[in-house]
Length: 69
Image (tube, rainbow, N blue to C red; front, side, top):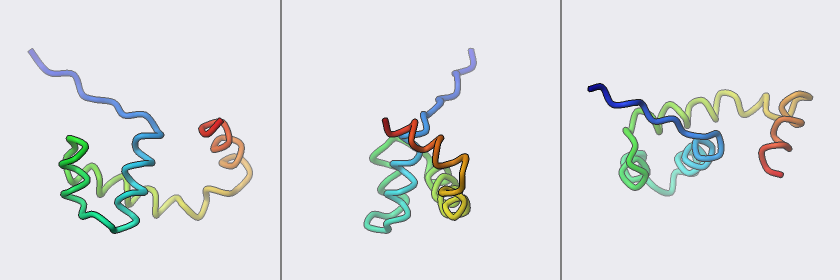
């Protein structure tokens, strides 16, 4: 029987990506501490850095506000 893939919520992904972007810990350390594959951590970090500049345009601000309320 195939195992169902894990799905992570936006807050978890953001927390992991932000921790990776800070550079205090290595990608491997973050992945190991959170039971993730290092490639997944790198992918979320890249997505955060690529999409970060568009975060504060009109639609994203309203959406981001809902995430943190």
